[in-house]
Length: 126
Image (cartoon, rainbow, N blue to C red):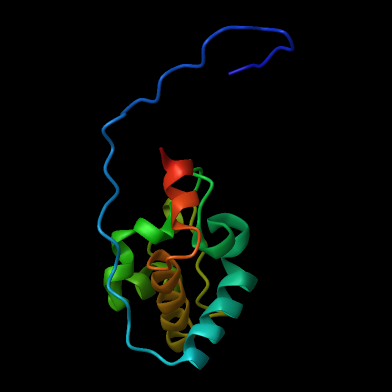
C-alpha cells in the first residue's frame, strides 16, 4: 500500500470484520518477584520482536493470544529448545533456562490479563 499527499482514495476493508479474539490464558500462581524477573527477561530478550508489554505489532505472533502460553512444556520447547527455529523464532536455550522461561511465560500471561489499557488494545484491534 502506498500513501500520497492529497489523495482521497478509500482504504481497503479489513479481511475479516468478524474476527473474535481467543480466550485469554489463565493467570499463573507466581510471586511478584517471579513476575518482575519475567518482565526483565522479556524486555531483554523478547521485546524487540514481540513488542512492549507483550503487545505485538502484528508482524510477529502476539504472545498475549498465543495458545503456547497454556503449556509450560510447549513454551519451553519453543523458547529454550528452539522448537520454532525453522519459522524464525530464535533458540534462547544458551541464555535462558527453564526457570527464566517460566517467569517470562508468567509475565506474558499477566500482561495478557492486565486491565491496563484494555480499551486501547480493543480499539487498536478493531
